[in-house]
Length: 306
Image 1 (tube, rainbow, N blue to C red):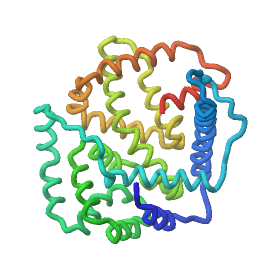
Image 2 (image 1 turned 135 degrees about the vertical axis):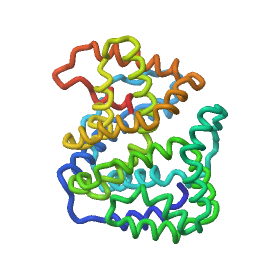
Image 3 (image 1 turned 60 degrees about the horizontal axis):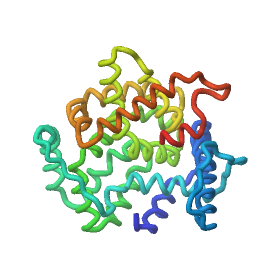
Image 4 (image 1 turned 90 degrees about the horizontal axis):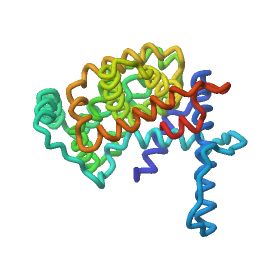
């Protein structure tokens, strides 16, 4: 996102002087992933720069320390904001859906809401678009006001284009269902930014895959722990607090029911089914292995799942 001044002004809104145990755990978990990612990127960079035409990336990271700096913490927050505000970015590759059933369902469901938003003034449109993103934040008013003061015509045009994607509406529906009171008790607003950015990036694709997994599990009449997939996403990859799991699992089930029709169709698009089948077979095979003393998943397993 080419708006460094906007990022810095938004980050200033979220400045805090204290933290919470859940927020510290979330950032610590991110730092843990970051340190292992840093090892892999440094390893690849070193081999490429040395001129090697062929080399193997180790399956297990040799990172010996967890890197935690003010820079890396700020970077997490910046990337969270960039993720949440990504819809104003230019789209270098546009995907078009021509399936009549999907288009008819989308029009029936969202045409009225989109039409109403298109009639709004620029300022009101920005508020309508981003209010659901930050509705649980005490600083929502300041965030929206800053966006209204900063975004220009081409930003608005890109936001309007984004209204025609199911992924945005899945995310908005998720936001409406979040247990905001519990989240605000557990996390600082900065930590919440990071959680929401994970949902923005991961959740639409995960919901599609999870829908496929449940279909396969029902057809084969044997469980390969599809529920563990939800547990892994929420607790191991995103890193939400254990006390939120049941609330979030309920939301996942609600969204599956709400978007069941388009998800069923999307599974059949292009090579989605073949790709998901490969993931499903690997998931079943992986779960047959007994857990190690460190648990079922290593950090490398979770990095690849991400």
